[in-house]
Structure formats: C-alpha cells, structure tokens
Length: 325
Ligand SMILES: [Zn+2]
Ligand SMILES: [Zn+2]
Image 1 (tube, rainbow, N blue to C red):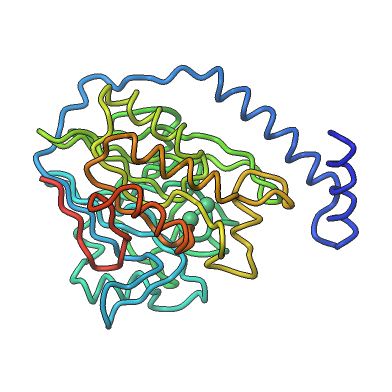
Image 2 (image 1 turned 135 degrees about the vertical axis):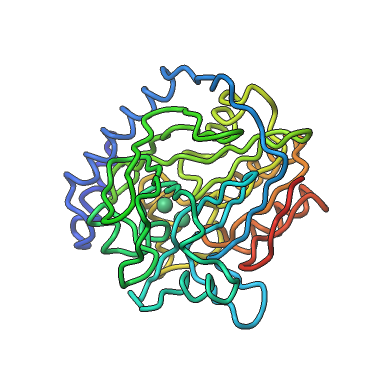
C-alpha cells in the first residue's frame, strides 16, 4: 500500500464509511484477482453448436420502451435461443414490492414464469438478483412473494440457493445447451462490497456468430470480449447488456455507481478517457449489433457509444425486443 493509499484509507475510516481494514482487504483481493486473471487460460467450449434465431426481450432495464412498462436500475432479459427460454437476471425490486417491477412488466409483455426453461444469474448484486435482501442471502427472487420455478435449472456464477429452482453452479466456461455457453465466472475485486464473480451468456447464432449478453460488465470489456471469443472460437457478432460506465452520473444513490462497482479505490472514478477507449474498442470489434444498458452507464457514455457505432448501436429499453436471425 502506498503512502497516498494509506492516507485515503484513514480518510474513509474517519468519514465513517469504511474501516481501513476494508480498504486493505480490497487492495489484497485486487492483487490476487489480477494475478489469477493473467494466469487463467481461456477455454474453448467444444461442440457448442448453434441456434437458428435469438431474441432478447428486455423485461427490466433503466428506460421503459413505452407507457405501461416500468424502468428501474436493474436488469432482467428474456433470452429465447432457438426453442429455449432463459430468464437472464431478475431485476432489482428496489422497494421490495409485490408485484415487483419485473413481475408487472412480465404481465404487461405477456411473459409467464411458467414458460421459462432456465434462469441465468450474471452475478449476485442487488440489481440482478431482485434486491438487497437477495444479495445478502445469496439467492434470487422474481417478486417479493415466492414464484414457483418447478425445479428448472438456475445457472449461477457463485454458490447460491433458491426454494424451487435447481441450482447449478457454473465454475468455468461451459456449454449450457445447443449454441449456448457461459463464459464462466470472471472475478473483480470491488471496494467495500468484496470480490464479485460475474458470468456472461454467449449464444452462437447460425450464419451470424456469437452474441454476448452481459449483466453489469464488472470484469471490464476487454476481458469479457477475450473470454467470450475464446469460448466460441469466433469473433463476436453482437454485445447486449451493461458495461458499467457511470462517468458523469449514477442511476442509483448519490453517485454510488461512480464509487462502488468500478473495481477502483473510492477516490478514483471512471474517467471519460476510459469510456472513450471502450467506445473505440467496440467500434474496432466489427460488431453488427450493440444494444447497451443504461442501468449502469450514464447518458453521456451511451451517446458516445452511439457516435462510435452508428446505426449498429441501440439503447436498451424495456419491451423493445432485439431479434437476431
Ligand atoms: Zn453489479
Ligand atoms: Zn448491474
């Protein structure tokens, strides 16, 4: 720890935010995670296959697509890959409501939990597992009242429990079905919250290529892209989801996203130049589709992504289906 880091650790302790031991633990975890990320050899998933079509229907995101749908700073997408329907994350339900915004949007969009074949949890953060209580208890919930998931598989990147889904912990890159794979959990140390393991879903679409669906983007764009391309062995056709660039504004709290969740110390914010680098990387990837989430990126960043990608870019909105076929 440098002298400056030590000074700041004491400052945050003095402000009553975090004990210096928290900051020290963060620095240690960050070194460990960075080391293991360098060591890890990306694994190709054999016999992945492909699907003839892919549809992503945003059920929860920051911007609603029309009146009658709710927006919140969380994520839930209905991913239909071939004939398999996967619920990707379950929103935030910030006020612990019954029915939750996810449940209300599902009703408005005519999506029934009874028609879902599997759940895929990107990572155990409140805006992806259905709220603060779920994050704390390492579970997930579609709404405040239990929703029976009939023993369907729930692919999770970290050990979690659920009263009616069959938990399937994904320890590394793995095939989940025809043309479907997980990148496996990618770890990132986060100040105050501790290390988080996040997985992205990769869907290989026939005649197009792999599409990566990502929750919060904590592992950062270069690592996610490298891993997803290694898993399939082909360049990405599209990226859908959140990349975590709250540069000029935060969707939750008083700048909470700018401070927490970016893998840095609290006085080191995500800079405009980092977001510009990400936009340049997206533009250079030769993507055909990029639909990015506003739940963890500010409008300034999204505008810049749009400038870099032109008509290949769209902002994610609840109810606005993305079809790749
Ligand atoms: Zn997160
Ligand atoms: Zn998120």
